[in-house]
Image (tube, rainbow, N blue to C red; front, side, top):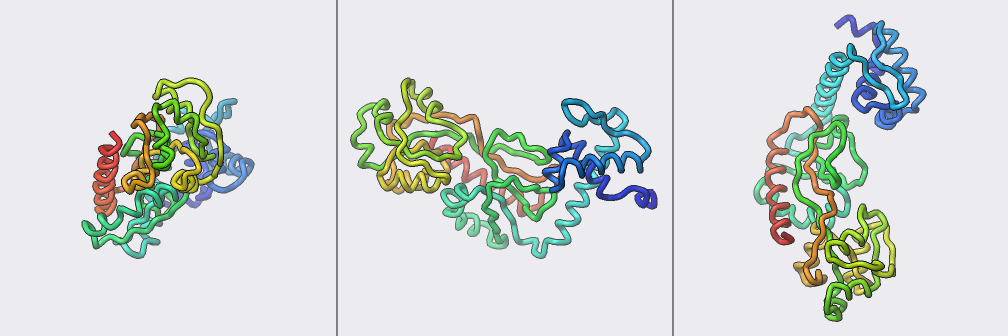
Length: 298
């Protein structure tokens, strides 16, 4: 390993990030440094290695043909380093750390955790409730549950559930509805961070014209749901957000018309990581829970 003395580790790490992500900007974001710093590290590392590994093009940094096996080996090496760091930092193999969006944790996951604990009392769960896309290879996060198209770099994704949306409102509001078009006459509460609009549901319902007039706008989906429960308007909700409130009767989903958003829920782990027993156990359980949710809203 003496040849490693001739190349700085930071330089190798930068080469791997640029090769995997394909751009200086993306590598800078992941490494937490400036684009200029990444560029300088690439230049220095190439000089220390004695060969150019990237072509600078208007479309980004393209790896040369000779660089492909080098970058592949670097990627594998840094994955192993990340595993070693995680192993060293992990104090208790009985703890499973999950990265999950706050709204999914609060409205769907937490109320089900008793069932997981009954089946696996030996596993203690730690929830990291965040909307940030955590770098799983460089953190102590074991698993992430993400919503989207499933196209995230550097991770292994397994599909859990298609996301469907539908209007929900209080039982009092629902009592005034005679046909689907009447929903458009209700005031709407809007989730400002939603990845879809009312057009998605209107198309599925065969409706045209203007969407419901906006009454309130929130930057948190849970607040939107609470507003709908309070009878302040109709919300375009989804299974994991509104399911519990619908089962309790605090909300109604009029007419049962649902629309696919094109997004889904995914079980996400670090690319190339070995799947531990606790991760397999949690994946088996959450698949069952998601399947139950799908059956209710199928």
